[in-house]
Every structure is written in C-alpha cells, then in structure tokens.
Amino acid sequence: MVDKSQFDSMQAYIYSLKNLWFRIESLDQKLPPFLEGATRDIMSGLKILPLTFNKCFPSFCRITVNKRVLDGENSRIAETKWLGCKPAKKVDSYGRMNLIGQSMLYGTFSVPTAVNELQPEIGDLVTLSEWTLKHPNTELIVYPIFWNMRQDKGYFQILNQYRKFIARFEKDIQGIFDTQMQFIADVMSKRISRENNNTYVFTASIANRILYIEMNGETEAIIYPSVKDTCKMDNIAIKPVSFDEKYKLKSVREYQIQVNSDELKMNLVTGQSSIFENGQIIWNN
Image (cartoon, rainbow, N blue to C red; front, side, top):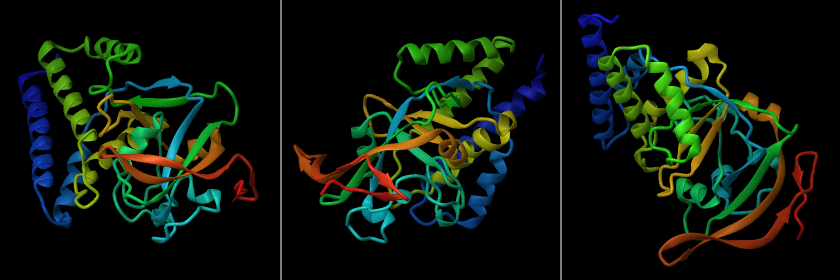
C-alpha cells in the first residue's frame, strides 16, 4: 500500500524530471556546469523497473565514419581498433548512452538506420563492420527501452512482462510507472543534433543507472528504437567488457556517402575484407 504522501512524492519527482528535461532542451549554448550537476543529482533518484531478460543476438552491424576516428582524415581505416569501442579516456563528450569518460559499443540491426543515426556528410568514407558471436547461442542480459518500439511480437512480450510486474501496485501507482516509462522512451528516442547535444547528459545518466547501478549492475546491453528511422528498427548499446568477451569482427566494407532522391545513400567502394591479421585489415585492393 502506498500512502498519499508517497504518491505525491512520486508524482513530484516525475514532474521535476520533465521540467529539467525541457529546461536543458531549450538551451542554445553549452550546458552550464550547475545544470549538468543538477541532472546527475536528480537522476540518482530514478528507479529503474527490473525488466531485463536474456537474449541471443547472433550478429549486428556498426557504421564508422572514417574521419571521426582518423583525426579528420577522410581516408581508409587500416586497423580494426577503430571499428569497436572508443577507449574511455578518449570519450570527451556525452553520447546517447554514455557519460563522459565512459566507453560504449553502439550497434544496429539495420544499415540504413545506422546511416540515419550518424548523420555523415556527402563524400564521407564510412566503414560497415559486421560482428558475430564468438560462441553460438551466447546470450546478453538486456534492458529494453520498449515504449516507442515497433509493436511486434517482441514488443508485446516485453509489455506483458512489464504489466505483470506493476500489477502488484495500485492503479494510481501503475499510472505513474506508465508515465515514467513513456517519458524515458521519449527522451531516449528524441532527435538530437550533433551541434547541440546538451540533452545527452540526461539520456546518458539514465543509461548509466540501467547498466551500472540498478539490478546490481548486471545488465549488459540496452535495446532502444532508432531515433530517425520511421520503421523504429532497434539499436543496441553494449558494455565494452561484454562486447569484447562475446563478439568478434566478421567482415568490413567501405562505402562513400552520396545523395539519391534527397536521401543519404552508401555507394560501395571496392574495398572489402574478412581477413584480419594482428589488428590490421587486409583489404582486397
């Protein structure tokens, strides 16, 4: 039983989250330190519902914009180290799922989705890498940001799990949980420009609680709907330790970004490979 004071406190907390989000989103300048600190502080009170499950992802893809890892040089990537997780000491800004100084592996199950997410420029060279399990049927402990996902079989399975969990609470409290889940899904799938990404401090703080604080820090990955994909194809963010332990590089292909009917398209450049020796990519040309 939750008394009125507890109910009011939960409502007030959700209100404060929304208020802080809109305040940060409205900024047209670099996030002030006091607001950054306020966000980290308020997120310490966020309760993440235990919705993790085990799932096998046999493979996924990554798109790397070459010049973003080669100090601005729009040239071919020669080493496999540039295709995986960025070293934590090199992470100097917030990402959708990572804090500053926190490495994260971002993957997708749809190549067009990855291109839309990364927003490369016309003429950019990009490298498509495919990653597969080192050992078949290996599973990840996954947390779903499911509220805005495609309403397919997987979505309804997660929704049923969520409904069973909150059924122990009174209707009013269930409504607050619904509001919180919708809010988290909305901010996680919000379009954020590369020029003004202040609100990443918000989404990264949520991801940090999911992956490293709640549920004893055992969660290995977060699946979430694509921000820019109208089909809402899923993306995945994986802890570096789990990625390194469970996945290996299968193949790479190099593309150049061009425009077709006002949309960014990847045109294949002859380079491709599935041979890697001592951290080097043995390109076929």
